[in-house]
Length: 161
Image (cartoon, rainbow, N blue to C red; front, side):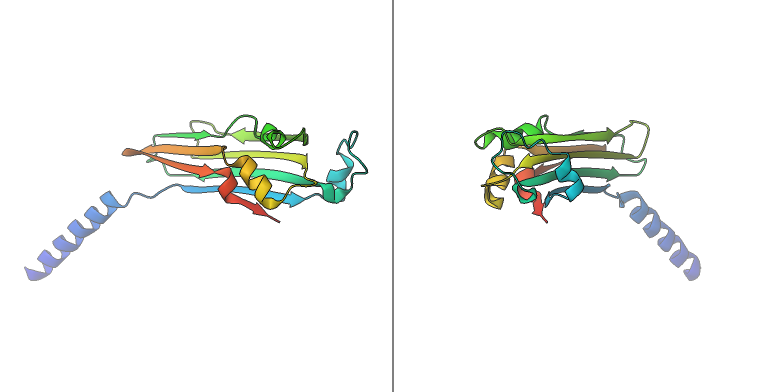
């Protein structure tokens, strides 16, 4: 009789843990500003710049990736429009070229976003670049019994390499 009580107690405990063990989605938001490769520099339109070199330009890369279980009934990822224009608010037109993609199909348990652009960085410190992106916020929310929202200020998460 006592063994049956232990087994029953163990089953009840496991079912409680299973019911309350909500797994957060696997979410990563990364922003990098890096030096250009020679190939990337060859694609830069350098007209209008005084004797530009490869070191006068940087590449901005934003990656947002989210994977989750079927328990999430809804997800929303909001990336500010016109990120490439943010760098132009510093002092002059600095954007050179760029692009991106997104894959965020409602029926799938993942979403991927990527944006890249090259900009003229001569005369800018890392602090200047971070400050320019401070107003830009990425918002990720999902519903899994309740709505959860996370915000990422781009200026705060930029990594320089």
